[in-house]
Image (cartoon, rainbow, N blue to C red; front, top):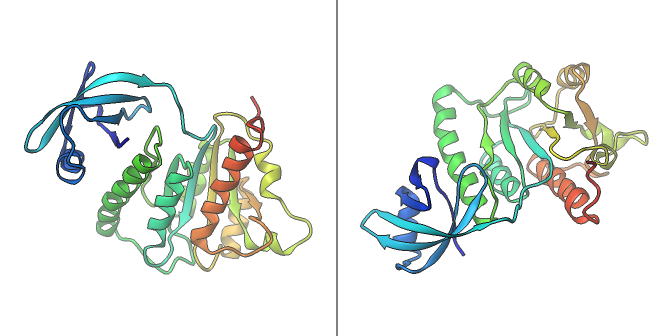
Length: 256
C-alpha cells in the first residue's frame, strides 16, 4: 500500500487533501481511482489507512478508515553528521540512512572535505535532499521523515553536540589498535529515546586537529569493525549495527 506524508494543514478531522507531487503520483503514476486505499502519515509520526473519495486534475481527497498502531522507528534517535564527500555520495547516505532509521542528518564541512558548499549551493541541495529522505521514508514505511539540518563546521558541530546524550565519531585509527572503543560496547549502554550523534569523516578522514578537538569535547572515538570503511559506508554500518543490537538481538538490548 502506497504511503504519503501529508502536511498538518491538509488534515481536516478525518478528511485529507492531497496536493502537489503526491497528488500527481497518485493520479498520473499510480493511476488510482476512488475507492483505492493508501496510507497517510501526519508529520507527528501517526499514520492511518485511508480511502480515496475524490480525484481532481491536481488534487486528491481521502478519508481515514483506520489509525495504525505500528511504529517502525528506532528506539533511539540517531543523528548522522556526515563529512561532505565528493560527488553524490551524500545522497546515498541520506537515502539508505533513512531506510535504516536515522532520526536526522547534519552535513559537516570537515577540514579534509574536497567539496565546498556556499549558501546558494546549500539551499539548492537541501531542497533535493528533502525530497530524497521523504521518498525513502515512504518507501521504507517510516513513521516520520528525518530532519536535514543546515551544514555545519567543526565548532558548530561541537556546539550542537551539547544537546546529545551520546557523542561518537568514527576514527580509522581505532581499527588499527588492540586497545579500542568498540561500537557495540557503547551501543549496549544506550537507553530508550537517547539522542546519539555519530560523526563520520569525509574521504580523507578526520584531521589530527579535529580528532583532538572532538576528544576534548567528550566525543568518543569508535571503530566500526576491523576494516577501513568508505565514508558513504560508515554511517550505514553504524545504523545497521544499532538496529541489530536494539531491534533484532532479542529485542531487549536497549535499557529502559
